[in-house]
Image 1 (cartoon, one colour):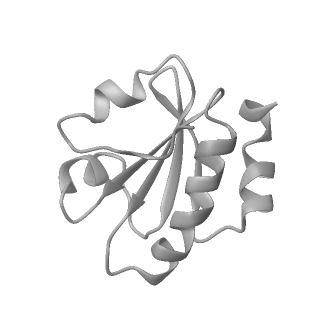
Image 2 (cartoon, rainbow, N blue to C red):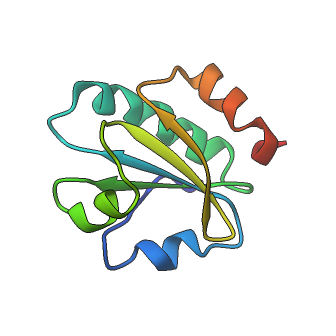
Length: 107
């Protein structure tokens, strides 16, 4: 059972180059909604490990990547497919809503 993977500015390109879609959580330790999102993402990562990689990038520790993708508010989830951003979800989402929004890659 895989969980979420930590990603940094230096490992970002390697992670999003996965052959599976990659959902990147742009977050920070001080962000309340980000902390609420963490267990939801862990569950999604474990339940859909065969179809999706869930990665977490701390925007305070890795400002270069957050800036590159224009992250203005957190949590922001960005779905990458074949190394390209294909979807962006801003703010806390309950698990059912998140799974629904990712249904095209999870089905």
